Amino acid sequence: MSADTDPLSPEYAAKVAEGYTFKGESITIGALVQGEQATESAQIRLPLKMMNRHGLVAGATGTGKTRTLQGLAESLSDAGVPVFVTDIKGDLSGMAVEGEPKDFIDERAADIGQEWAPKAYPLEFYALGGIGKGVPLRTTVTDFGPLLMAKVLGLTDVQESAMGLIFHWADTNGLALLDLKDLRAVIQFLNSDEGKPELKDIGGVSSATAGVLLREISNLQAQGADDFFGEPAFDTMDLLKTAPDGRGIISCLELPDLQDRPHLFSTFIMWLLADLFADLPEVGDPDKPRLVFFFDEAHLLFTDASKDFLTQVTQTVRLIRSKGVGVFFVTQTPKDVPADVLGQLGSRVQHALRAFTPDDATAMKATARTFPHSPYDLEEVLTTMGIGEAAVTVLSDKGAPTPVAWTRLCAPRGSMDPAPDGVIDDVVKASPQAAAYGEVLDRESAYEKLAEKAAARSEAVEAAEQEAAEQAEKKADAPKARSTRREKSVVEKVVTSQPVKTFARQAGREVGRQILRSVFGVLKR
Image (cartoon, rainbow, N blue to C red):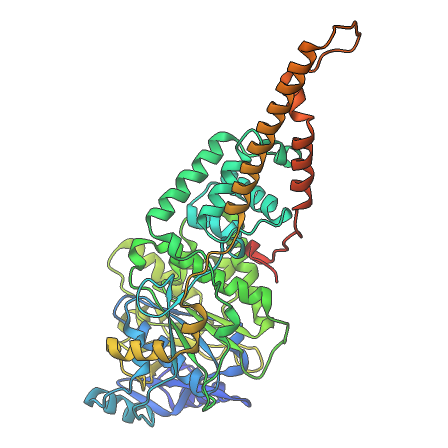
């Protein structure tokens, strides 16, 4: 073994130090580990310019993934980059509070050469639909789109196609689907005798499929989904903000009940990313990203996903980098992420794995094979790294993978405990977002418009029946004359009557502008 291929040699330390030195701005995440000690001269950095090439933070439970996520978010904020994080257990809320000096933090900082000091960070707290603490984060069903809605409802490919037709009809007719009762109303209308002809030219929706869709919507509502869909709809541009001192604001989405509705939460978060993709202009490769998006418990996004959904995820991850947005998936093993998505992730921070079962051992081997060639026995390294240590490789500023480095990671500066409720309440009350999104709106939408049409049609039919009855009565009183013309039936008289014709013309004039959609079928503004 040559000196520069021995991971414990000074030569390898020099190779790592050179590989993680970049021309532009970067953030430091730790130092190379050699033996029991870290090598302070070999600092491990991530170039800001390449953060929009995405990344993966993986590792077994209890190995330090959440603290790695926190440290990355804090460093990006210090660099002026806005950050979005999902807070599954409430642990990340502590970034709003200064961390407390502790012996183990001091020891780690001295070992890796970190100049540690306690620091609080600018946070915005959000809660899906207002469930939990934070500014309510909602969107409309129209904005959400058919593909993401199908994922939430757990639909089959056939049912997903039917959902696409329903959204298409609503879009074409300018019917806003603001909440789930609007979607339910449209499905019921299109499955009625009056509505079925509307989809005749594009395939239609069977009664059986409509019934399944309505049942699944009811199940979704039983999970509290009515809180998530409605107005005011969240503007994802509000995630791209910096504090007055120039630090990036960390938008922290609290997810206290994730275990009760994992598909809804994970898909809703994917909507945020898709909406950003639809709204942001192209910027190419900026010196630092506009936003870095951390998707914790990422495996929930891909579980039971349809082929079309996975295709859209891959497309979004591949293309959104040109909008200046970086995406980091946080999960237990790389196998939780589909290969087409994994291939788009330029940075890797792999914490320790546990091999208790044959499946675990297989996953370990697969994880080791995803790293560039290195002098490490990665299967051994992945089982022996300590808490707060990881095998790291990133894309350099030239686009080439850096040497694999066993890294002891920096300690976060914010508190590693959940923030006190009073702190979160104060942050939310002081936020300008609370005024913008705090109160629920319920304006006229598809439900009200279809109800009005149904009422108008009922009145028109009643008037036509009255007119037909009056004409029949007059005819009965008039002298009979021979005629070769066939007598109209009562139904024909109603349908061709002036009130019904007037109603039909008015309904036709109510067709609005067609709604345009982007990836995942989300609304394109």
